[in-house]
Structures are given as structure tokens and as C-alpha cells.
Length: 636
Image 1 (cartoon, rainbow, N blue to C red):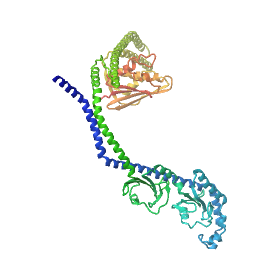
Image 2: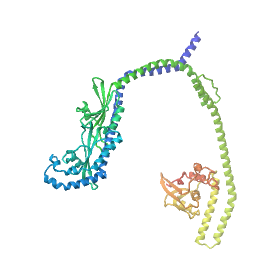
Image 3: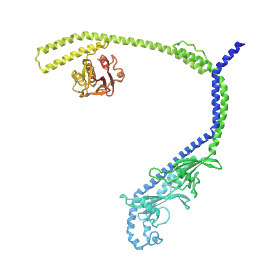
Image 4: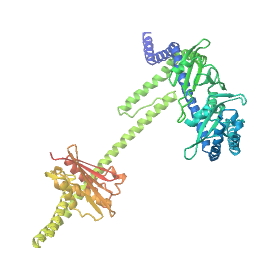
């Protein structure tokens, strides 16, 4: 009995390790979620107010910007009419006729605004142009057909003296020169009137007047257009239709806070909205909250007109009003949903904890033991089948991983052994090549050197002959030294250190080679000195120069050398104009037996690297353009 109780307690303890934690965590999350849902209700409402206020700010700003842009487009579009040739020609002709009547006008001594003016000056009627009038009527008809509603209510043109030249409606022929709008237009070039209601057409409209100038910028007349408010607010009305929903209203206020447009209706109210003072004292784009007796509170988001490009704006304001009912009601439903889900989550957490513990914990423990076994290098594992597909998939993956890792380690071991074997064989080949070269070349070189000495001693001593003999001796010495360097690739010899001028080192390497006529070698002047083995370093730069010459080939080219000081080191760069190093061997060019030339041994750059590193320096390469950078410590 005691044994059974102990076993049960042990099983219960193991079960609680995972089930209790899962149940506790899930229950705590659900409980916290529920509490937070209650506590933060008001805070969330405020956040939603901020969100909706900011969102409505954005709507209002976009709408007022779109309105200003549309009005500017209309202003510019009708201003283009002032550049029509027919208007300019008619006005110039009209002004000439009018000038001939000046004397009559002065004799009559009648002001243009007097009723007798028209009766005593019949010539004013003759100034009207039927062709221009028809052109203006066609313009009105064109806009109506284009937009399928009335855009222009009236168009007429006056000459430079205010006399009407073309009328699209009405019968007035008196002079406009004494009208305030005409004077402003003449002085400033543009007049924009207030919103007016025409009882005859049953339209709200605004007057836009433009001064007209000839090619010499002389004032020749005025174009006046009455544009319907339906057109000016057409785009605005479409956006308002989208935004207007129950609980949210869209308004357009004039500069005095009076509504011009309310919920898809154009009207001109005589009273300003009660909160207009808040808008006047606020920022250009902002929102604020108003207490409301009927609906608890109301959010007011607005954006003031700031103009668009050349249009300075009308000081109008777009306002979006949002009632609290459209905010809180939706959130209450969300809160109730959260509570329901939280309670269900608490119950599900308790049930799920026991289910997860009994079905997942044991397989997970087995997988943990398998992972530890694999990490210690034991790949001979046995997988027990599980009733859970996911656990079984993971178990199979562990088994496959162990098998593949075992094969991979064996393969890598074989590859490593093969690489070592290949490297040893290559080094053996290098040793054999070096021995063969030493045997086949040293004796002939000694014979050539002896023959050179005999030639030098038994010939007439001229400067040219001395230079030739000396050059031959140096070449023989370099060849002998190069043979020794090949041998030293596997056997390092001590350096014969001395002070070396870098420029003289490069010049000596250049002189040792026969430079083709199609290639120029540029070596700068330098006083930098290094400490090193002259013969070994000379062979390094002979090798680099020779590689550059071979890369350039028969094409015209240049080998540019630079000598700089950096971090107490001499940085020597040898750059050529050749086609560059093939990409497939660029990363391995300093490895032994790697060469892009058919007849190359592949030891040149590897030997250069060994020599430079013996001098505590570095050598690197770059492509496009090809350059080798040698860094050697300066002589202190």
C-alpha cells in the first residue's frame, strides 16, 4: 500500500512539473486579460478617441488639400483663357475703337456709372464682339459636356476701359471701370469674390476675374468668370459621400465659421458653428472633444486651408464631427467578447494542461535524451514510435540527422586525409622539380658565367661592353638565386639584411628585365628605406613586373608604381592595365602550383608571399584594375 502511494505521488509530482506550469500560466494569462479588459475600458476609450481624432484629422487634411488643389486647377485653367489669340485680338481692336471715342466721352462729361452714359454713348454697344461671345458660350458648353453639370454660370470680357466686349448672359452694356472688382483685377491681376446665390439659376457661385495683357505685358482688358460652387466642391463632395456615416458628419466652414457644406448638401448658413472659437485659437490641423448633452461627448477634428502652390487658400476649414455612440457602442461589444473569450480560456487552460502533460511531456523527455546522446557523438540511437504525428516526425528527423551526421563525419575525415595526401604529393613534386632544376641549370649557368668573365677579360673594355657583361652577370646571379628560392620554398634560408632604398630596388628590378616598347613602367621618386635581403626582394619585384608584362601582352599598356607611407610601413603598389586575374583562381593566386599561364610553374607568387612574410610584411592583390600591394616595415 505504501509502495502504491509513493508511486502515485511520484507520478503526480512528475505530472505537475508541466501540467501545473501550463495550467497556471494559461489561467493567469486569461485572468489578467479579463481584469485588464475591465480596468482599461476607459483608457481604451480614450485611446480610441485619440485614434479616431487623429484619423479624422488625416481625412480633414486630405480633403482640404484636395479642395485647394482643385480650386487652384480651376484658377489656372480659366487663366489660360486670357492667353487665347481671339480674346487678345478682339481686345486690342476694341481698345483702338474706344480711344477714338475719348474725345466724345470728355465732351459729354458723363461718368460711366451714370444712367445717361449708355444712352448718350451708343458706340459702347458696337464694341461687343459676336464671334468672341460665341467662343465664350462654346467654352461654357464644353465644360458642361465634359463634367455633365454646370461649371460656369457666366463669362464676359471687358476692354482696358471697362467696356463690355463679350457677354454670355444678361444685357448690360455699361462700363465696369468703376466697379470695385474691376479695379482690384486691374491692379492685382486676380479677383476672387465671395459666395453668392443666383435666384435665377438657383446656383451658388463665386466670381473669378483675371487681368489680360498683350505680348508686351500691356493691360488690355479683364476676363470675369462666375464658377458654380457645385464645381468647386465636386471632388470634396465625393470624398464627403464616402466619409459620411451615421454618427459622423462632414462640414465645410467659411472664414467666419459659417457652414458652406453639410453632409452632402451645399448651403450658406448665416450663423457660425458654436465651437468656431476653438478652431480659430487652435493649430492648422487638430482635434478636440466637446461635451454633448445628448450623446455624452463629441469629437471635432478639423484642418484649415493653407493653400496649394500658387493658390493661397480661402481660409476655409474642413470639420469632421463624430458622436460618442459610434465609438463606445462598438467597444462595449468588443469588451463583452473579451470577457467571454477569457472565461472560455480559463476553462480550456485547465483541461489543456492535463492533456498536454499526458501526451507531450513523455515523448519530449525521450527526444531530449536522444539529443544529448547525439551531442556526445553517439549516433547509434533507437527511436520509439509515438502516437502523435508531429512527435513522430521530429523523432524520425532525429534519426535521419544522426545517420547523416555519422556519414558526414566519416566523409569529412576521408576528405581531410585525401587533402593531406594530395598536399604531400604536391610538395614532393615541388622538391623533385627543385632538385631537377638545380641539377640541370646550375652547371650551365656556371659555364655561362665563366664565359662571361673570359669575354670581359679578353675584350676591349668599353662602357657598353661593361654594361652588357654586368647585366649578364646579374641575370646569371638572379637565375641562380631563383633556383635557390625554389628550393627554399620548402627550406627557409637566413636573410642577408641590409638597408635598401625602395626606389632603387624597383629601378634595379626594372633594369633586369627587357621591357617591351609597347609598355611603359612608371616609378616615382622616393627616399623611403627598408631593411631586407636585396636579392630576395629584387626577385619579388622582378616576378611582379614580369607578371604585369605578360598580362598586358602585345597591347599598349602601362605599369604604374606608387610608394606611400602608412603606419610606419612602406606601401608599394604595382598596378597594370592588363585584363585582370580570372575570378576562378583569384582567391588562390598565392597558393603553390596555382597559375593562369600554360607554362607557369605556379610557384612565383607563392615564393613572393614567403619572401615578403619573412620580412614581416604583407602582399595582397586586387582586380579591376589588377594591382599587387606590398607592405614592408620602414627602416627606423
